[in-house]
Amino acid sequence: MGNDKQTQLSEYVYRVYLDWFSVAKGGRKQTPLEGLYYCTTELKQEQRVSSWSIVLKLGEYSQEALLWFLVDAQQRVAIGDVIDLMEGSRCVGQAIVYLVELQNMLNFWFETCQICDGQGRLVLYMDEKYHRPILCCDECDLVVNLHNQEKLHIRQVKLGHITLADIGKYKLEQYARHIYKK
Image (cartoon, rainbow, N blue to C red):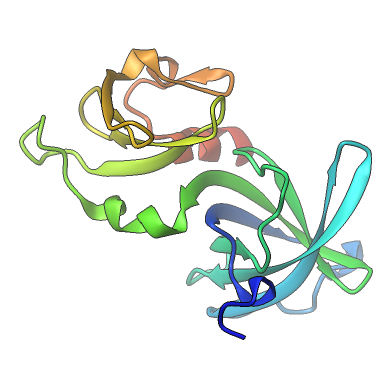
């Protein structure tokens, strides 16, 4: 059963902001407490709806979470996508994706950049154009493409329609927080 594909978490983990609906809008009387929360979601892509089971590891205030699909979603979930949180047929909230990570590369999260003498922290992102993992230093202009270990200048990397140079020193999650918390 341990090798059964149905019991495995997705290869990708998504960092999300949570928007819990009020009771008046069909939401829960009380938001889930810190810990694991299980629900389902429906992803609408290419004129078809797929139902997926997801697990959320909630933060202290239930406003940010890590999200895994219990089975790998064939379609891509990208930064900025909105995922409905369903309890039965009732939508109780939404999760807004602000960062996509590979589970087996999460150990890179706390490594420091050697180019700027350990001042910067390497943060893992997914290049939305080519769907490849890249590491970005949050202090200097270093970008490492994990697909081929190539080191790039930050202005050579495009993430979807957003160029990292356009954001300056802001990390993508800070940029997403600015966009989606308005």
